[in-house]
Length: 339
Ligand SMILES: *Cc1c(COP(=O)(O)O)cnc(C)c1O
Image 1: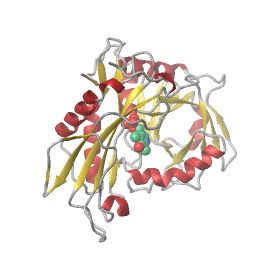
Image 2 (image 1 turned 90 degrees about the horizontal axis):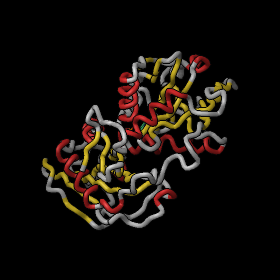
Image 3 (image 1 turned 45 degrees about the horizontal axis):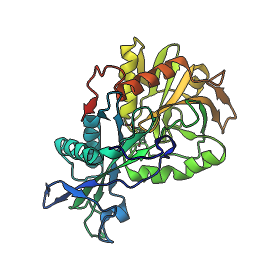
Image 4 (image 1 turned 135 degrees about the vertical axis):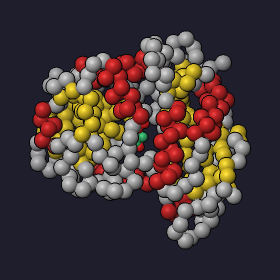
């Protein structure tokens, strides 16, 4: 039985569910998958994750489809990406098969929290890995804990699929040029909180970061990838400090399927004057359309949406991806794991 919740009004917060799954790494190997009903983690106060930020995570979603079945979107891609993140911070890499088994298990165990089809809500899946060894010397831990919990989240666009405004502020960087930007690391988020809050105070939904080395090219849009449509071409920044978004990768494939040319390349700030559509893309929203981009240093306001509506290409890409996730459209690339 599905749980009776006000699915349409859930926030992107945290709500307890029945179970989470865990796996521990010690003595050079991963142990068995444990099912837990506890919402807390018992750890040593000297654990490396607490002092030196040895923490990586993922974010993916499960949906209740039109046929009533549960679909998990691009599970294998997340399994691969968190291994890359682990490599980046010298943490133990969880085998992809184990990641997949853990995600399937935690979703099955909490199936009653997968929101019904049509509610716009979904089950957010949060895998995370932390360094557990007690030490004060700066070196990687030898013990790790991998946890996956789930929580139902409401529709991202409560007031409809509408454009929001973003801004460029050169006094902030999210990451360093050859730093940890390409990995999904909690510390990157800590480093971006000041900028994000500043932008929110000024009425913007996110900061459009520039490349941290030259401050010349577009990088990421808050915790999301930036995409734009220019003369019918899908463009997205090429940069070594960008987190490779699975949503962006999927949208690029869908664009190609639609016969839209895709370019991953440097995009200069000036080029914003020539784009027809833009969006911030990621698991949370799929695509959040951009209305205007204000460069707060030069005072230039780049009006992307002239009529205040999302553009046709971004809308079509968004609807196609959502349709695949909900089992309304054929999953031609095999992106869904159907339970
Ligand atoms: C998670 C994340 C994204 C979006 O990635 P998806 O796989 O599409 O959810 C983009 N940028 C950053 C910094 C992220 O952490």
